Length: 455
Image (cartoon, rainbow, N blue to C red; front, side, top):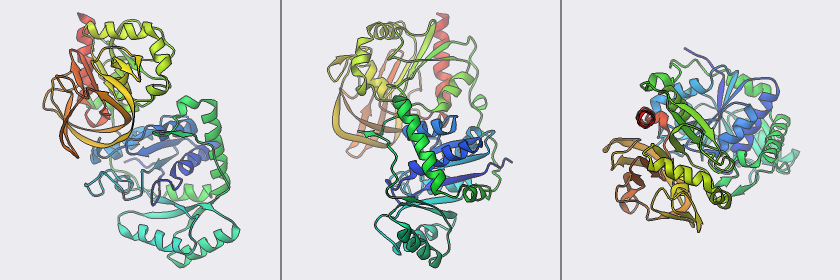
């Protein structure tokens, strides 16, 4: 058994300040010389980017819907190996999970799977004594969730803080670990899908993380936070291992992995699984690199914000042509969300790679939610009939939204839906997948890359 001090940062609802508090805690504890392991509940890609800047190690997601509850503790132990303490940022409100599925994938669910104490971040800006009723309700709703501390956010004054503390002492004595003033602000610019990813902001993102660390370090009792984290009991699970999840494919084919500012949405475990399955994983940046890595036998393009860089992506004509030629030669290509947009004919009127017969444009409508998908076409990722769990998150529309050989089918609010494209060795879809939840994807993809390299 392994014992890693840990805690979960939660809130009654979105917008209470979880990301500022969690990132600030990670940065402040790291500044003390501790090795801090950052984690995020759910399918978010952006918050883990800030966590990674604060900790100096990858921010990792813990998604009980896509990866399954049984993998949460092993994935946590894998990511937290060698850490002195782990900070897990929750998602939405503490008890909000996958729609219609009870607690599944909620912050509370993950906290229970990790046997971790919970710190509740409360937006106190419009209340005083009522804060005790709110905290009492969250603490008593599920007795298996150990709500062990409160951090008060957006507190107006010393007098306001005193009233809040008195109410909480009267209401049950859950300790207040910190109080953050309403006047204390940290610049974290946003746009249509939330915060601007840390990879896009460089120096500004580093400054924001530093400011969060200084703010939380000055507002929160870090010694009390560490003491609370150390009360988490040992976990009986073994750490997740990519090597144990896949079969090794001989030949060591080179798989190019798109990254950079336009394609920053990727789970660390995806690349680890590709490498464990025998691939040589080589990152590249479509905004900067004029050609694919030499010897590329397979290509993976994850999510991100190509719509913010459409001009630069379109202008990189040499790379677009190389990707089109790679796909035409039969090399496996797996693209999701932003990758789908990049492989299409056009995005907002600008020429893209032209690999997939679809045109994309920005939309006012946000498409968001978990999906239970069935593979409708045999592909380099999954055999027909495979059932996987994924997530959609975009403000773009592809026309058409599915090809003659669709990638996936699922039941949406309006009934059965087909989505995505399987064209030869290309698999392109809006659906984000966490490959740790279906590690056979990596083996299948690397096998296809090895076959192409040998042809």
